Length: 321
Image 1 (cartoon, rainbow, N blue to C red):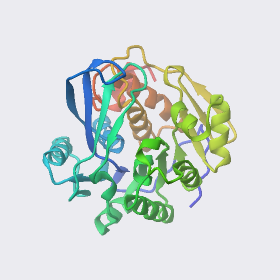
Image 2: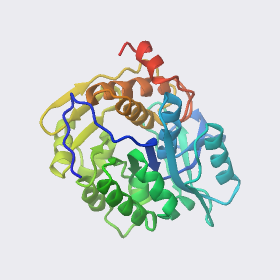
Image 3: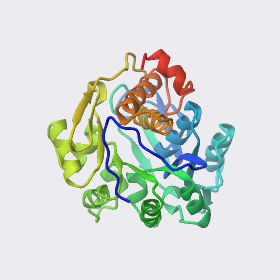
Image 4: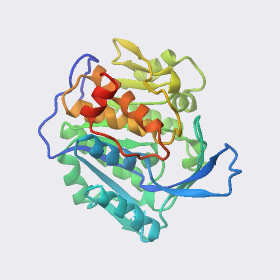
C-alpha cells in the first residue's frame, strides 16, 4: 500500500498488539572512557548497542510497546544483550542465537559524530521465520537500517519484511545510515540503498548519511534528492542545527532542543524513539518531530546509547511541547 503524508496530519494505524517492531543489529558498543577521536584511549566500557535495539528499549521506556528481531552469538556477549532486553521487559522470542560471534562496534567517546570500527558476526545471519512474520503482522510500525540490507542473508529477510509490511498496511521506516565499512568491497552499496528508498514510507537521514549517499550539498537539496528517489516523508537531522521535515509538498525547519552534550552515541536512535512513540499515541507528524528532539536532547545529557528515559508525557512538560 502506498501512503501519502501531510506533515500537519496524524498517521492512522490499524489496531495491533505491538507498536514498533525493530529489525536489525543487536551488538556490543565498546566506548572509550576518555574523549578522543583517534582511539588513543586504552580503556573501554561495554554498553548495550545496536540502533534498532536502542530504539526498542527507548520506545518501551517512553510508554509504547516494542519488539526486536535480531541475531546474536551463542556466547557471553549474546547472553548479555538478551538478558539486558529481558530486564526491560522486552519480548526476546525474535532474537535468534546463531553459530557466529556477537557483533561489536568500537567507538571513541565523542562530543561530535563518533567514528566507529565494525566487527560483524552474528547480526547478518537473521533468518525470516514464521515467528518473525507473526510479530511483523501484529505491529503498527516496522523499522530497519542499512546494517540489515548491507549483507545477505539478512538482506533477503528485510526484502521479505518490506513485501509483507506493504501487504498488511504496516508503516515502513528506514534509517539510511550508509557506511562503506559495513558493505562488501565489490558491491555498490550506495545504489542498493537508493533502490530501497521508494519502497519505504518514512526515511530519516542525518547530514552525514546524505553526504555518503549523494556527496556534499545543502540540506534542502539533499532532502529533494531523497524525495526524487521516491521517499514519501523525509526527516533530515542536522545535528546542532535541528532538522528539516518534508512531505514532498511542504518543507519546514526545526530547531534542536539540546542544551547540554555529554555523549552523542544513540542521539539519532533517541530521536526515532520519541517520533515513533508520539505518532502511535496520536500526535501529528509535526508534533512527533518535536518529541523526537525532546527525547534526543534528554539522552545527550548522559553517557551511552540507552539511558533511563522518563515517559513521553513527562518530557512533554519538561520541554513545554
